Image (cartoon, rainbow, N blue to C red):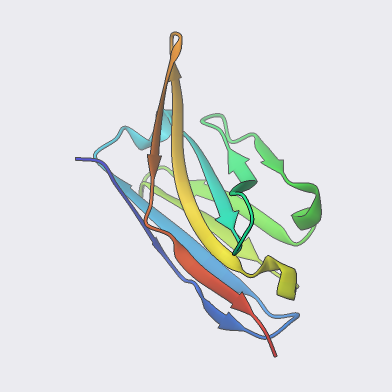
Length: 119
């Protein structure tokens, strides 16, 4: 059974920092591309950053220079360090594990963790 368990969300003031973690089980973690998505009320879910199995990263423009994604394959965990947080970063953040298998894709999701940026 595949499980992705996020932690680290919470309430933070503008300009503050949070570190999200996502612990994976039930998959060969090192071969999966890992990503963090977020969904704000009334908006579509969007990819924030991802990191592939070769540790190549990709960031959405609004978080470049503020967020850093990393992975520890020995711990089956992916992290999202979020600095200089803004109110518009408020959303539920979801961890995703993705892998292409031929023409098919495998996607697994965590349950989400709430991040609220407010004074």
